[in-house]
Length: 234
Image 1 (tube, helix red, strand yellow):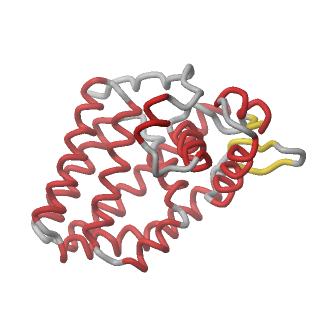
Image 2 (cartoon, rainbow, N blue to C red):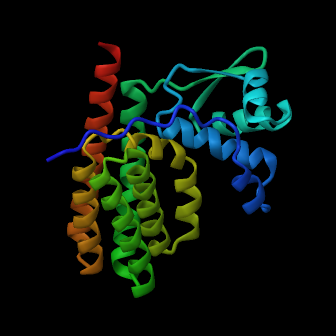
């Protein structure tokens, strides 16, 4: 039985003191980019939402420079659409955008899981299983943000298992858009069950089953994204 996903936290805008203190390796631009990216992927900032440099700088308590650089990065990742005069909007994905993304990611994801099934190690499997446990916990609690972020961690763990640096570079080009699409799943328990089956196939070294499950998972993600778009436009 599915649980209603928890509503996104609309109150969090400024960078927390913990983020400022515990992540010294991140620049101000990187912190702003990460925060805005997470808000877009988590649905806090909906498609079509305005992103104005001046307003974001004030709400995040930073200068306009890191905001401007963050918006440029997010535009290159395909999550925002630039507009003239220092603002942008959260990208609205068309059905063609989604189909194009799935066509490309199908090739990437299938190769990734096939390599993961062949090159799996106990350490890599443990990392993937831990991400799946966090995802399942979020689903049980109806915490959509936790579940979806853990789902992204699961995919990253599988990518690490594949052990191909060139594949990682190619995958990174569409990684943020893929995170957004995978985040459109409303039925968190279905998402968990699909990942659990995929992990079982990888653990067993069943390349063909991992291939089939990955294709099914992408089709399921596409259907969820389309359904959410239909609801938003009705």
